[in-house]
Image 1 (cartoon, helix red, strand yellow):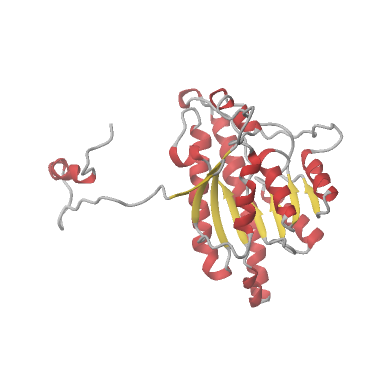
Image 2 (cartoon, helix red, strand yellow; image 1 turned 180 degrees about the vertical axis):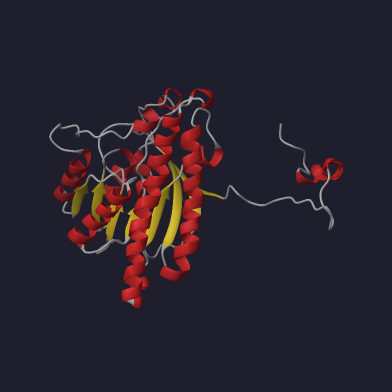
Length: 306
């Protein structure tokens, strides 16, 4: 039985790589899919698909339709306020609603911090953070309006799936812009949980996938590591991540909202990066340098990291 039958999903950045795999998997599970992709470039510029006469999004839609699914292409800029609302309108006018939003669109502008330009910083922050905020804001606004008009609509169990990364959770040399954006997205996913789960029954997750995509293959440091093996399990095949995304979108998924995961090959890891651990107290008085010198060791009872 298809677990997502009758549900409508939006996937951003779905023309290639991980987004393409998500869209195809969601369609296989019965979802009607809005395949959003702006264009062909690694840096977010527009472009055509491999066939030349179709956009990447249109190619994915053709695959879904050929397999008996339902899909529509959308070329809206999801980092733009009006573009994100146009994306929502595509879902509403084509399929009559939206139940699942997978925020996946992203770009790279890798550079060492001391060489990074303001433009390179701004471009990555815009596509990743605004590209998550604007569609989420549009779709969440629709869900709130729907709930106000019909309180029973909150039982539809809507889902947000955001894309963080290992770089954002643990840092990565040469990716200050990307790591900062992806770290922010993990927190944004939890914020969505705090604001939307209790009131609107919206589940919110963040996943940090590791896979072979145009983005990873454009990085000299990663291209060899993610190369397809000649034999055996292809650990970095982007298709490995897609079943987890579809499972999160399933209304019966037992994982709690507001959680963050990394997904690599055959491994799924729960990540809790910001956890309060040790604490020191001044004892009902203001800290002084002398008190801090004396007490600071209590923050690292096993010794400070090198």
